Image (cartoon, rainbow, N blue to C red):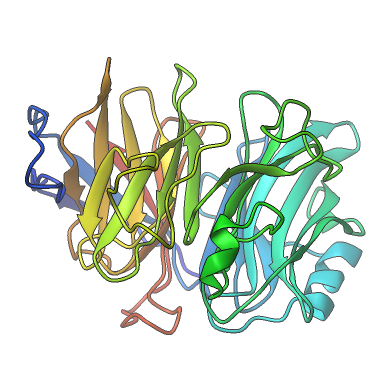
Length: 356
């Protein structure tokens, strides 16, 4: 995995996201400049990314069912130990499933406590274990029974400002499950670090935080407490939503905007987005777009969001994940080796992106 020192300066195209034509567009945000540098190359279908207290990032490799550590200089170290062996033995990559999201739950003198979202022979599940150095201890299932499929497996994990773990799931191809409050699929779940329903959930004793989702792929919070989620559409509209407790986001009755459900704050045609990972900075929400092959920047405003801006359009192919690094830059994972892209020399890679 060679590190490349090629700095690419990219002109930003200021584009409005596709919104319903009967609604006024917000005022356009000022154009921004962006630079992208190869930090790591030669990764095999990277999917999830979580930063550790020491500045390193844990990166999951979906189809290889393993994880690596990446430092700020682009150095790559394999994660080893009994937990790594367990991932190799238990994860069953297929289609969009495999080793997906990862989140830092906390750290102590014993190491970093991590959660992984994994597709196994029986289900999608969340596993918990402790990383000491590059050694991952035994993994314990904390959420099981999330239905799996060749697509719509969800898979993003994030710890909210309330200290609870949020889990995004897909409908796994069974659309009615998204509206079934007894199903874990087509939902955003909120659980304790032991996997129990978090206190204060909309329905006591239930892990469900919101429902009516097709396939949520990104989770993040702004400084004012708003929770954002990115979601794949079916044929027409992809969505950026603000998540409210107990909110119903309409799938499969509605794709995009529709009466009777919580409305997305931005929508795009699916060929412009297919948004996966999401990151929130002090001034914008960033969405990594797969089919759209771009990084969407949605400015935050005092009363909502501004006009989406398209960055890195077509420059690096499919983009899977975006995260805010400790130094304030964005780390972006490409996904041209995922079976749907056209790999380029050096793919897949981690890009260090600076916007300003």
